[in-house]
Structure formats: C-alpha cells, structure tokens
Image 1 (cartoon, rainbow, N blue to C red):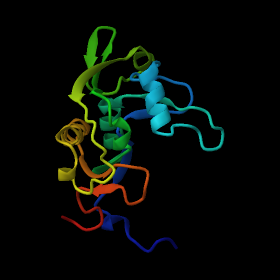
Image 2: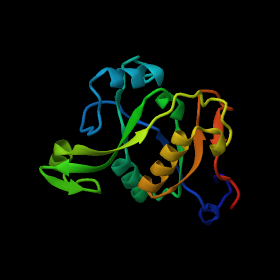
Image 3: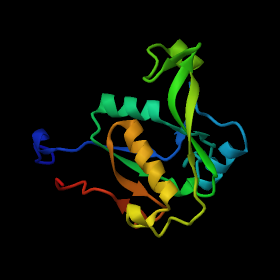
Image 4: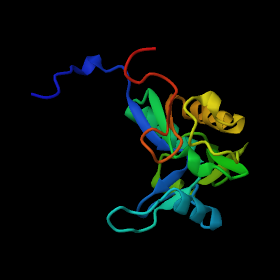
Length: 182
C-alpha cells in the first residue's frame, strides 16, 4: 500500500529554502538580525506564526546551514522562495562560513557549544530595486538578482531549480524541470 511508486524511481530530492533565513523558537541562529532590517524582513515576508501570530526570528541567508541541510538530506535541488522580499535592499549579506572562537568553519560546527559561539562570515552582494514579481525566467530578473541566485546555488552545492518571486502561485520561475530529467 502506498503511492505505487518505487523508491528507485525518484531521481530528485528537492529542498525548500528562503532567500533569507528564519527560525522559530530558541537556539543558535548565527545570522539573526536584531535591528530594523530584521523587522523589515519579518514584515515584508509575513514572518509571523500562522496559529500564534508570534514573530519569527529573521536573518540573512546562511549558506553553511543550506550546505549542511543538502548534505544530510540528500537534496539534489533547492527551490528558493521569497526572493521578492529582498527587493529594495542595497547590499545583501550571505553567510559563507562561521568564525568560532577565531577559527573559520566552512561546515556546521560539531558541537552545540561551538554553534552557540558561531559568528557569521559574510560575502556581500549588490541588491536590486526593480519589481521582480512578473519575472518568469531567470533572464527576466535584474542582473543583481540573477547573480544572487547563482551565488546561492554555488554556495549551497546543489542546483537551484525554482525561484519564488512573489506570494502568488503563479509567481514562480522554473529554472529546471523538476519532474522530468533535463
């Protein structure tokens, strides 16, 4: 009983990741923002609990976490959501590694203590001001948004096959076919 699809028929494992990072509850969050930018991401992105209305914790995209999630879950692809939320931000930091007590870590720290001590090491990417909600191909995006997506793909170590450019179901860029081999 089940879907009737054998496990060897799956050739893709797709992870969903936001163009920035959020977290619910306590725990380490190296890229967390405690300033107006964190509030802007929260408000623009609608980052509030559905049932409780509690604000989610917000921060910059964490490529270390994205690489780790892809590795342990066997992701072949990522679908990036909420790229539109970054519109209007002049410079967008992306966490590429952590500094843990003066030592650079390109992978997730092995202990909770080290993770609590992790400070983000950022690379900065130029932002864009154009409305991207009408984009349906990567080429429709402003060059800086294209470069941002390309950087996330390289940093995560898996290909990006889809990008959400707005809250609507049709506000999506299909970069690669997720159903059939390409």
